[in-house]
Amino acid sequence: MPYEGFEDYFQKKVILSVATTGGLHGKEANPNLPTQPEEVAEDIAACEEAGASMVHLHARDENHEDTKDVARFQALRDAIEAHCDDIIVNFTTGGGGIYPREERIAPVLETEPRPEVATIDVGPMNFGQTRTAINPREMSEEYAERMRDAGVKPEIEVFNQGHIPEFEHLIEEDLLDAPYWATVILGMQTGTPPHPRNLVNFVDNLPPETEWQALAVGRYQLPLTTMAMLMGGHVRVGMEDNVYYRKGELAESNAQLVRRTARIADELDRPIASTAEAREMLGL
Picture 1 (tube, rainbow, N blue to C red):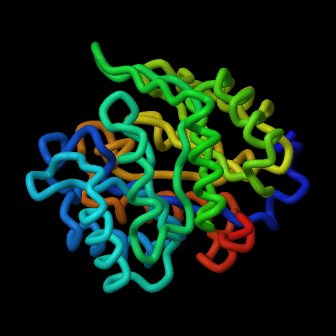
Picture 2 (cartoon, rainbow, N blue to C red; picture 1 turned 180 degrees about the vertical axis):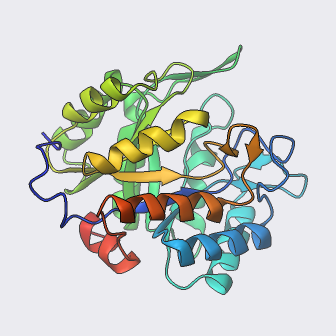
Picture 3 (tube, helix red, strand yellow; picture 1 turned 90 degrees about the vertical axis):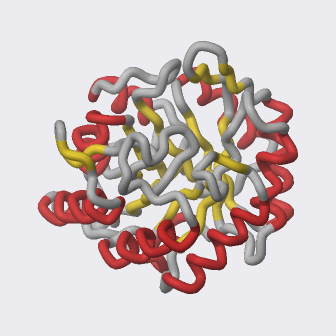
């Protein structure tokens, strides 16, 4: 099991990921949420300086709406190249229930340079009243195979423990290379309820050789990412998942959330991984 205690707690560094924007809420939720390539890249540069070694990206169009347009992802990629030093770029392939399958993976394969990492959602999820992302097994197989051929490492997004057999299936089919990289997600609509016991149980059931990070939605981001660091895991923070710094106080920037997480990691004696160290840990 990936969680085997604290044997290497003080030696294992924390990979700190930031999810700057997301594809659901926008500036109506927090006017500081970046949506356009230049403002996203400037925020990412500040996050990188604060300790983030990976950025998870969604693209928005000129009207701030979510898009899978390859040109908009390319604009993001170009802005990051201009503003950042050496952060790991991670593209979403989410958008089930809205975008066709090919549109979801096209930015991963058609931007230059390609991202080093891209997500795969391995099971169904409900969003709101009418939308369901199906994410069937054969699509996950296709995405994993095409990413492997393109030299992009999959990040397996597991929203509940029912998705773990789908993760294991990809391993059994030799479509993923160890160490595997997974995001454990708590607090989504039909995902895992955001409770400490659920995080421990979730991580206990991940496949061997999995490096994992935890994210939690809204007010649960701070306590559960802190707990993930106590467990020897990695963390994702950012305004995709939580637009508040504390109750009643909107986050000023993604970098503000990253800086707080880095301070907590320091207090916990969990050093933050550099980008080079993160690459080595994930086999990039």
